Length: 399
Image 1: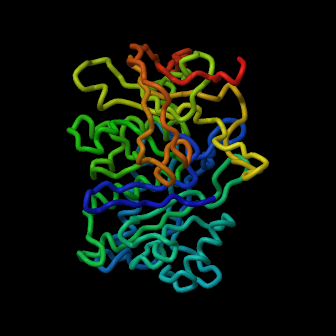
Image 2: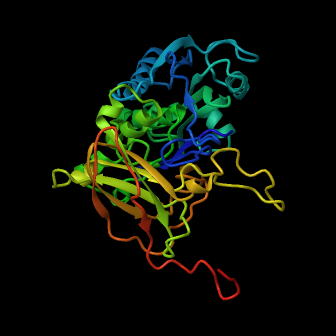
Image 3: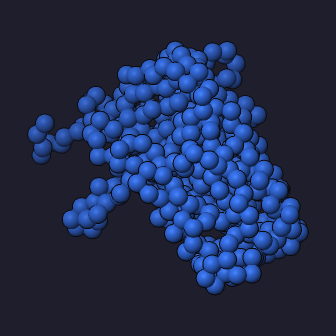
């Protein structure tokens, strides 16, 4: 299982995240039963931090305090139960014994212990030695994170790596970004560590947008566009709570479900981005309060074939009813449903739902709704039929 990498174009401040393990918009990895992989709910998720500086200008104590705050962003969600606990410094293992992960050999040793579920390390890559050794450009990867080991139902360990060159107080060889931008990026990574995939909401912000659109822009958006993304959006809160529901989740949130169909009304469409936007108060509430998911998010993205991929994917269901299905957790209220293509830039590591982007066929219909969603209720049957998609059969085939 690969780990997501955080990449970006610093000059344009469009920092993108690569999530090689992405399985669905919403949860990161789906079991064959259709349930998401999550950390065990009993006790806090334990992690260990590097006993060295983050960079030439951020010492170990300052880095540790910032990491604690980053985990705390997710732990503070009132409708979720996930919590985290620092267990100490990274434990000695194999070639690693001096407390500071500063060489590739030490990184490999620590990751081997993560892969055997011995510990979950948070590693400070002071000079990008690790980033470069993994084949990435030192000025294009802020960090990466994700699970290391799983069992049949749960994450057992995970890792976070942070590139200190972005916080060393120097303009060369990598220009610094602000502490707020850097921390927002790593909060995003901790979202992957916790089991979340990317989300696409207010994609117009790629070209610049106002404060209301920024307020609705998820922390788990594939690109980091603004340091305000350190504050979780409605989407982030809804999905982390769906994975780790607290007692108040059912008293504050409901669910909208449906399927996306081709124009024939029979064939389900996969990997269409579906957004529920709240429309209770008017104004720009639909821009600030929205939750999304990719259609068919539970269904296995690759089934393999006997020619070039006999094994296919090991995550997701093979249940036909999950094809084209969307399930969106939302705060109680009235919502419209709209669909759109996943942005062309969101492929491979920056993907939503699958590493390969599949453009939405046809044209999106007008938003549907309003749909009234009560707390604790599931409102089903909110199907969307795309307009003008190609026929299911051509002249050489029969229905």
